[in-house]
Every structure is written in structure tokens, then in C-alpha cells.
Length: 186
Image (cartoon, rainbow, N blue to C red):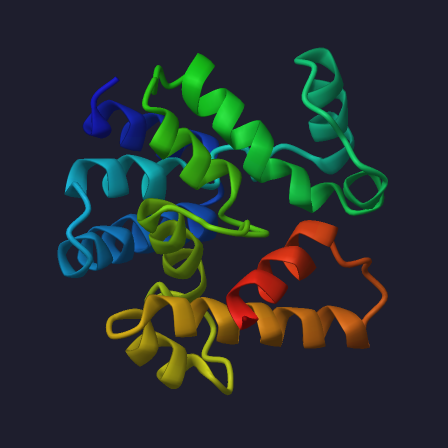
């Protein structure tokens, strides 16, 4: 499916703030793709579709994952907001007709990351965090600068801050986030 058609569909499906964020991630992913020599079209598709399942309520995300045989961990069951990434990859393939496994994996891993990410996966992971519409966090300036000069350092910083934030709250940490942090911290 063409990007323009997907954009029109997502504009109808997503709340306006989420759609704005989505467009910001698409733009930022394309910009990072230029810097890191990744095909821009792949970055555009992955950035545009990364949150395509975000508007689905958590309990429905669990049901859909079960229906489509997508595994749901205990942490995801307790925090269904994490499921939008794997469900989004499934929807990108089945609804939006994306058959590029690299794009689908970038969507799947954009929330937790994973050890040894491809460059496209890294780009979408970071673009989701630094896109221009994001709330300014204490470290945003530094992470944005790092993203365009040393993407691995940016990933390490984002994961460290995420783990610190989750450790201070009541939400459980997805084991993949910790595993990814340990990988990039070596």
C-alpha cells in the first residue's frame, strides 16, 4: 500500500495528537535514515506505521494478540500498552500490506528495543523518542544531538533513562528493555 493511502487511513484511525506524533516519527526516521545510509522509504513506512495499533484499547490488544497467536507475556498482560508494537507489526503486514521484514521488525521492536538491532530498528526506536512533537525531557537536547552523531550512545541513554523512570514507578519493566540496555551498555 502506498504511503499516501496509509497516511489517510491512519489520520482517520488515530487521535489527532497520536497522528501528529506519528508524522513526527516518520519525518525524524527519514532524517536519521539519510545520516545512517538506510533506505528512506523503509524508514518512512516504519515511522508511519510504528503506532498503528496504539489507538486500540489494552484489553482489546490482548484479545487480538491471542486471536492472531501473538505471544503475550505476564508483563504485557499487566501493561498492555507494550503490546501495540508487536500487534502493530502484525497489522502493518495484514492490513497495510507491508511485506518487508526489516520494516516489520522495526515496528515490532520500537518500544523495548532488542540486542543487536538493525540500523532501521535503531532509527525507529530513537525517532519515536526524539521526534519534534515530543515533550521536552531533561535529556532531550542531548539525546537528539547524539541520535545524529552516535545512535548507539543515544540508545544507551534512552534505555538507561527509561529503566530509571520505570524503576521509580509502579509499572513492571519488560525484560527485553533490560536485556537491550545490558547489550548496549557493554
